[in-house]
Length: 224
Image 1: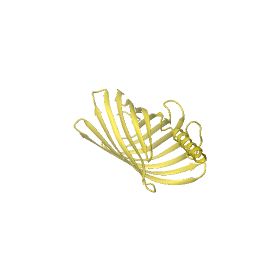
Image 2: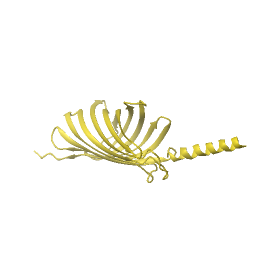
Image 3: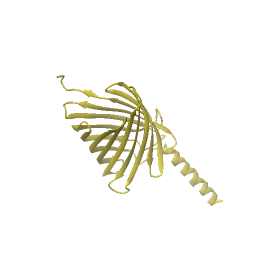
Image 4: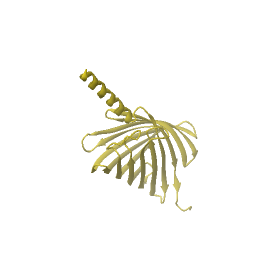
């Protein structure tokens, strides 16, 4: 009898902990991205993301990122940047050790090419992550590769998809994989919105996230 009660207790505990991860919830990421041109060769990257375990509630993560872009040519961009990430790893107000603040330095290289109507973008990124939790401070290093594909339906509408893999430069090697698909609308030549779906896969856990992205690019160069 005691063994049966113990087994039931273990199952209930596992069930509760599984629910606390938020894996079964349809969350959302609300995002802004901008490239702000300051000279023919230099631009400033600006970015803000607000991530939730649910579509409009249960905060998960705030990400702010900026960087200096060097435009080698129209199809190649090198970036040195910084990011601040505030993560609440708990779900339904159940605190755990995943709550953290992170300062991140990154180096990035983007290559673009076109095949027919398909626009390809290859993004290579290295990250140095300085993480502060309630219990510890530590540094991690990570490499990321993203292959993005954009297909213009017409002058206004387009499709966008990407797959990005995260590789840790320490154990465990596999970090995560993000598979994304979206439909976008060009409001202006420098302003578009995208609505999509992201499958965020970690070892042993997956998250489904809706994404609403705003991309607004500005040009601060003086008119010739």
